[in-house]
Amino acid sequence: MSPAWHDSPFLKAARGEATPRVPVWLMRQAGRYLPEYREIRSRGSFLDLCKNPALCAEVMIKTVARLGVDAAILFSDLLLILEPMGLGLDFPTGEGPVLGNPIRTAADVDRLLELQSMESLGFVIEAVRQTRAGLPGHIPLVCFAGAPFTLAAYAVEGGSSRDYRTTKTLMYSDAGAWNAMMGRIVRSVALYLNAQIDAGAQAVQIFDSWVGCLGVDDYRRYVLPHSKALIERIQPGVPVIHFATGNPALVPLISEAGGNVISIDWRLRLDDACRAIRPAQSIQGNLDPTILFAPRDEVCRRVREMLGQVGNRRGYIANLGHGVLPHTPVENVLAMIETVHEWQPNGATP
Image (cartoon, rainbow, N blue to C red; front, side, top):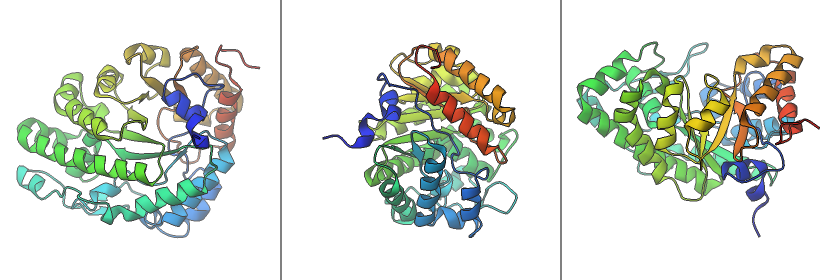
């Protein structure tokens, strides 16, 4: 007998099957906009929270119960994998992440450690187990990792960047070093994601949050082969969601790189995105997170407009075009979720 989550609307949509209603979940589902998260977060630093499996499980279990979403996503951070690979990691108060010992040269790439086991990230794997155990049986758990380019860019830049000049300089000037670095990241991330699957994940999402800084030709040459190699290493039968943001022109190539579900940001209409991806792939997205600051009526109108762009297409998962922003009104997040759940596949609300 299949587990309760197997035929959930989320997993059926991820497999491209018909669903009784449109499933919905949110990126950055547990965040500073939620009082429940702020209470747990007050107990220590962000990094302390990420390394405490019981608190990671608690924050997501409470979030799913509060929002009524169709899938949970592990509470974690995509940069945690870089710490055991030899890069210092810190989240200074009020600032973005900072990575020590950045990769700038071929010699630096030689000191980037490739993960051989999950011993150094055992707290993440335990968080997966505890989150899965605490969720209702019918709610799938999505786990995740950064995509090869985004992790490489963080490793090279050492933090946030406006122009990614340091990353592109290495990429353009030393293809051998670039490919060696990406290969180590691909193999490490594959090990990491497969360990999360073994611990209880029903699906995984790959976040390419920074790849929009690239043009089509650079993506095809420097990124596509590595993203494809990663996706091919993930255990068969587990849906892979491939998310990238920042450049709609990349969507056909992201689709080519692979994934069962292609997640779209808000810069491209969903009907256009449906035509840009492969027919067998499902689609996810793509409400602009800032719309959730609008009046409730406008939020609901824009959600229905988004849903209408998909029409009767099988394999659709409603989501934001990126994560929930801090200070987002909780009532508007709930309005989005309720509007999706009320929507009928033929485009008529009951």
